Amino acid sequence: MGISGLVITFNEEKYIEKCITGLQKVCDEIIIIDSNSQDKTVEIATSLGATVISQPFLGDGPQRTFGLQFCQHDWILNVDTDEFLDKDCFPFFEKKEYLQLPYDAYSFKRRNFLKDKEINFADWYPDYACRFFNKNTAHPSSHHVHQRVVATDLYKSDMHLIHYAWDSFHQLIAKKNQYTDWQVEEFIKKEKKVNTFSPVIHGATAFFKAYFLKKGIFHGIDGVTFSLIQSFFSYMKYAKMLEVQRQRKI
Image (cartoon, rainbow, N blue to C red):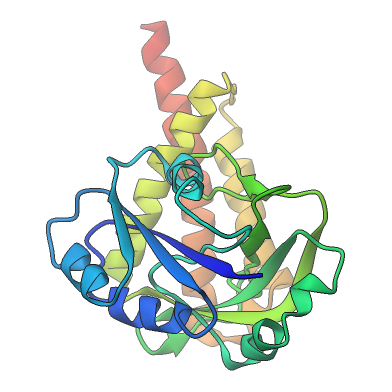
């Protein structure tokens, strides 16, 4: 029983070759759902033998779901372009252990990197992400940001993904800011209400968790920095929603 590699892309020329060649070690086909990239993403993917489908971005979950119809196999390995299988993953796939186990989805621990520095503290590790599932019983959620896989029996494995998430603080902050915008859109769709205290409570809770409970305190200024980043964007998500509610009352 084969595996389909499924990747959604937009201007990913930096990592697309490494992503595809990594997937080809365990996958029988590679499907790329591209959101009209303006760089060489499509050219590189096509040259490596991947099947490329163009589709304007529908949101994180919906874009992945759209891609399932093009996958010939039931088992889907759906990584992001900046995520790569760590060496502890390969025995699992080579021995086809997933065919012998009762689970229909598997989460991986992500090793997050800021350029060359691994961030394994302040709630940035293990950062579980489900990237392997059987499409007959599991599927991406409809969330437009930070989708999760809805499964019958999800297993949290000890396998790792290497995640080269950001090249700089500037890029990290820009991505986080974009995520909070998308999260506010989700709030609006769900008609979620927040109050004046919501930003403060969520921001303070995020800092306490990251700094004290998730070992940020043991990592000097880096621990403070990454705990504050978690806190600030948790705060801003609710602050932005509060602004939306106020504007609607005007």
